[in-house]
Length: 329
Image 1 (cartoon, rainbow, N blue to C red):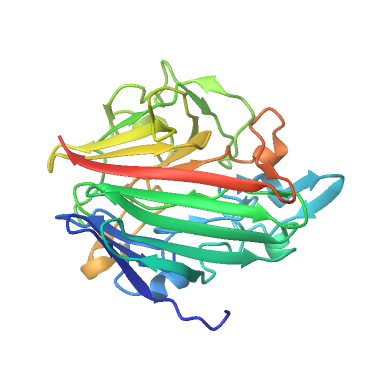
Image 2: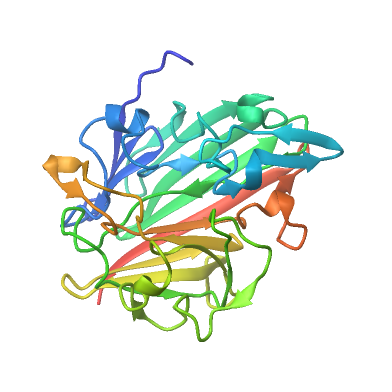
């Protein structure tokens, strides 16, 4: 439905309210709005800000030089973040309009969005059917299930949710005093264009070590513009078949966000390129005004044989789940 107009949908269970603009997450909270965003649809569609609240694809993150080879065929993608292809190209899944497939209210309200990506779209092979379901599974828990099926050709696929969180409130300033713990004892170092080199190194003894809770600002000056790195998630504590990926804590409000996933990696990004963006209620978002916890396949995995594969075969089903658990501590 090319002429479908983007609308705003609400999930509300009495404790938590989530606002969604056709698969874009714009607001989660019981007391404060903890997601960076806009008051209307247009700035999202016009990409006024870098991927606020979006599901990005067909392949999240960077593909080196916008090139890959699959089954003997060379593919060339749009180089929309030179010299690489980023988050699906010029018209990635973040700015296409998804259809609403199902919308349920009640105790566990949910909404399912669907999108059909055609063969050759943004240079990618094969037709792909995608769904994204947001569910308030309990009073303080939001679950996102992203699923897809490759219909007729093998394709790389790596969906990620790109919400910018600020637990002190979207308009509270930077996140440098918020604490983060990441259940990842290894990370993938990057070259000067933020593409992984192919190495998988221990975080121990580096500024990338968040294996125990640490304020974001403690070592951020040692990592260039800020954090924009993929962590190889450890298999440890589990919940509903998902592993603990990260925990964010804001001492000023006592708010805590725990993230659980079944993805192999997570991009930890500290809004390094956000600069003077006017958002909700006229709030101005600057550098480090939010943080992203993008669970994902490893960046540029299609060109790195030692990274977990992101290729799905025709008829194969892709599944990626994220569980966002809010609490007060």
